[in-house]
Length: 149
Ligand code: SF4
Ligand code: SF4
Image 1 (cartoon, rainbow, N blue to C red):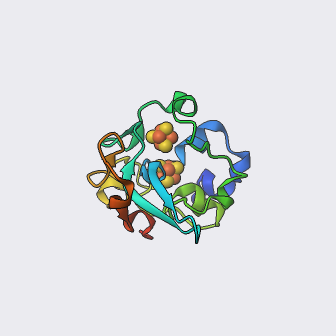
Image 2: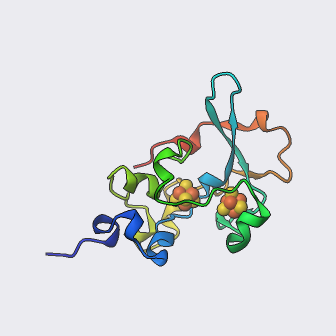
């Protein structure tokens, strides 16, 4: 019988820093800017990426310094994940906190960091940097919240 992987046996709050970081699939979707309707509080995704997101790798270009450079950047913790209603449905932290399995394209499952892009889950090829996007209202999109199993 094969041994279960760590994300199926260790609670998020008990993972090592290395295990925790490895859960990120590198989709980049949490780094897209969101708009909130002032009346309904409804959130909309845009295809506009934080200025620090590398649009090719879909990784933060200044990860260790991100909180200082982008004060709005949310540092994920096990405690806050259930309350982050804007986390994409495909996000591994959200999936695990909801007791769901990681999909085939997750790099920990496929052993290949490219599968998240090949499966069309990441922002690669469909996001624009906030440095040149212009008005956010012109960039509202649905795809970041798609459920890609
Ligand atoms: S949405 Fe989740 S899996 Fe994707 S980049 Fe953000 S933290 Fe990582
Ligand atoms: S600072 Fe980095 S991790 Fe934070 S939203 Fe921007 S690109 Fe993403």
